[in-house]
Amino acid sequence: MSALTLALSKGRILDETLPLLAAAGVVPLEDPESSRKLILPTNHPDVRVVVVRASDVPTYVQYGAADAGVAGKDVLLEHGGDGLYQPLDLGIGRCRMVVATRRTFDWQGTVQRGARVRVATKYVRIAREHFARKGMHVDIVKLYGSMELAPLVGLADVIVDLVSTGNTLRANDLVAVDDIMPISSRLIVNPAALKIKHATMQPFVDALRHSTQVTT
Ligand code: PRT
Ligand code: MG
Image (cartoon, helix red, strand yellow):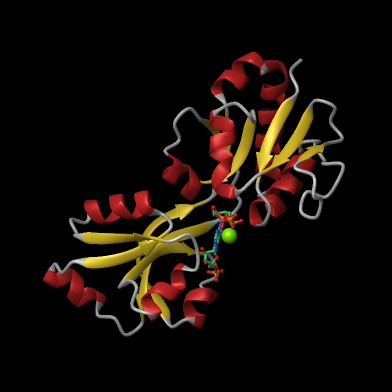
């Protein structure tokens, strides 16, 4: 039996993944966004979808509970990518990882003085590596959401967060002062599943690659 289980997360990744899956011939039988089911059959007898938190997708695939999934590069870098094969950049969920601060904060001066900086972020690993590369001394405060609030209430000098339109930064009088990296979502595959379920996995990966090329 070589049925494939795909791990997807609700929200922007799902919105952009469903058209790619459809172009690859895979359509969930119920709308994953509104369904309360956590395991969804698809029109394809050999493919089912499980709906999990965005940051849990790499874990499900790493342990083989899902054979493949879609996860942002941000999530993959924080997870570490251990035990995951990443065959495709799907080109969806595009945004940038940036350092941002209050418009009135003297970022240049702070950098020039070599002052210690307090950073609030959900992306502890990415932030730590970025500031280490710059030779800056930082204290990192781990948050799970609404990073934009932290500099406004004195919890941190700067944040490390994702930006797409820039509307959230603007609405809160924050500015991006450093660009860390571009982000997009990747197909991730369990390496054992790729071998054992090769007969279903390989055509699926090929079809997704094709639909990525025609859709984006
Ligand atoms: O919500 P939950 O904790 O379950 O997980 P999640 O927040 O990680 O999931 P979700 O669905 O919000 O994000 C999933 C993935 O989408 C992320 O891992 C990114 O790879 C990708 N992505 C793309 C984004 C954005 N763009 C984005 N703009 N994820 C989050 N944002 C947030 C950003 O953090 C900021 O708060 O949107 C806000 C800024 O948006 P703009 O348009 O105002 O700049
Ligand atoms: Mg979210």
